[in-house]
Amino acid sequence: KKATPSDHPSVSTSSPSATATTTTTTTNNHNSMSIDATLQRRKNIEEIKAAAEKLALRDNDGYDWNANYYIELTNQRGQVIHLPSEQRQALTVGLTLHAKGQTFMQQQNYTDAIYIMHLAFESFGRVSQEFLHMIDNYGLLALDIVWCYYLAQDESSLSNAGQWLQIAEYGLKRAHGEHLERLRQIRGGGSGGDFIPELSLYVRLNILRALQSFYNNDLNVAHTHLMRAEMDLRKIQISDVDLVRLESMGFTHQESSRALRFCAGDLERAITHIYQKREEREEKLRRERERAMERRKQRQYGATKSGKFVDLKLLQQLQEFGVEHEIAVEALRQTDNSQEALNLCTDPMRKEVLAATLFARCMNDSRLYEIEQVMEVLNGDMVGGDAVAVVSEARVRAALFLAYNDVEEAVSMLSAP
Image (cartoon, rainbow, N blue to C red; front, side, top):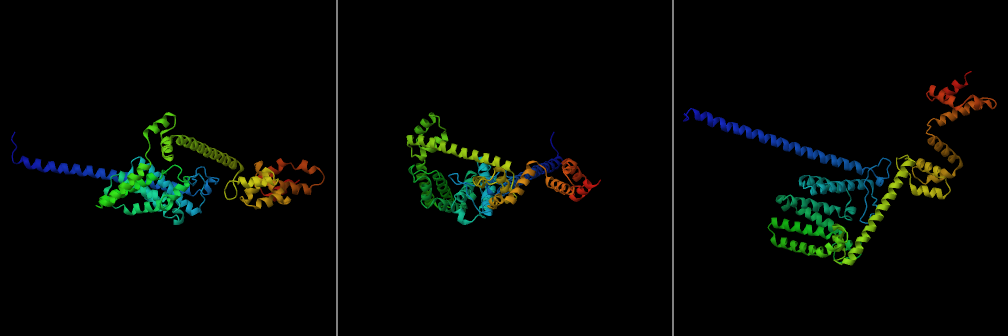
């Protein structure tokens, strides 16, 4: 049927109107879902930050009574690093958030990775420059932020990443040395040739420098950085044939490639290096197992006044002076691991009180002191040897219970005819 002129307005006006309404509704729903998802991600990250801050408050590297989980700061040799409390907390939060950001980066969640790494950078900002210059985590964090820009193909952020790259280069050079001399010293004087593991960081740094220069139309500088990246990359390349030979001997791909790089491609030295690293890992695990056993033992001893574990070194010193084990533990608990514990154990009167307190705790009897008071008063008032028989401990306990632990009222009750 041919449409009449009167039919066209109804079709032309209603159809676009319906389409526009549908598109607007879909767009609004999409934006709403996108905003909700973003807010939820931000909320999750803030919860991660709050958890990191709470964990950082557990000071003394885990030697806190309630520290079932804790963070321990160590150097590349596994030695514990001790810092002032505020510095330690800020550094711990920064390291924790950075590690979580790297996890997001591995999951290709670059938006959240960048956001949480910025939070880590803020935490590092509260650490003194004197200490930050000694570690490479600060520069590595800045490098990871720009690397996320690269992986996310964010050309706008890459072109404006000059300040981040300056921080990365400055932080790495302050920690490693202008010519990596500090790293070579740590690695044993460069016995593995030109290779040091951190060279891969400088490959990434120069690649990012080249990209940033390219986006800013500085092609000569970009070419220079690419040449530097290529030179460093050649130093960490290894033979595929040697790698296969090591893997055929039962070594893993990671330890084989790392050993070949450390030993400049020398196969025999690489095998020795692998066994040496395995022994070092076993030794580290052994020390960790010993520390875990010590912590279990310390939890059995109970907490000091400030909620810390009993110091096992001080406990051993007291025992070397001839103090009984149980008395030494109780003294350290009461003196909060101070040197006063020795005076407490060597003074006869104070040691007697210490022993009585220990006995009360071992018997799990919080009312032993009141019981002894009541029996002492009653036994002193009664004549002859019938006092002990007349006033038994069971009667004293019952009287204290009825008297709501009031010693005088319990004595009056028991003294009544």
